[in-house]
Length: 140
Image 1 (cartoon, rainbow, N blue to C red):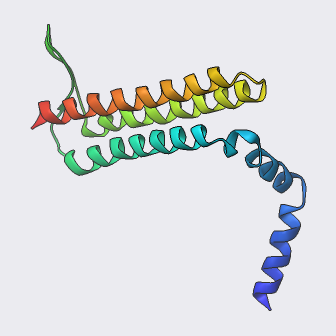
Image 2 (image 1 turned 135 degrees about the horizontal axis):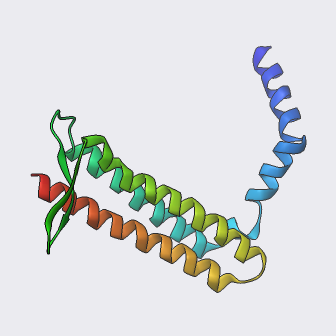
């Protein structure tokens, strides 16, 4: 009885304004494209790796850790252990920005520009993984 009522409410919600807009957004050609699927999957995996690497190797400590190391000047940024998670957050922000712009370009039939934005986002994520590994290496 309760399940039927919830199912009825869910159907009404999905058939109203917001539900229709969400379904039409994800029914777009953009999300049916195989290249877009692969690039989005790789970007998300790379960002999850970045989060996991910090979660595994950086432990809460009371003293400041090294956040940035420069070959020419040595250690140039110290901070709290929580600040290392700024790198994956920046990666997520750039990912969402590039996906938003990529959708806009894709709808304007500029598919190459859309793919280039997604590839740039993947390269950003890979560079952030390299930066994360260097932060971990310098702290251990």
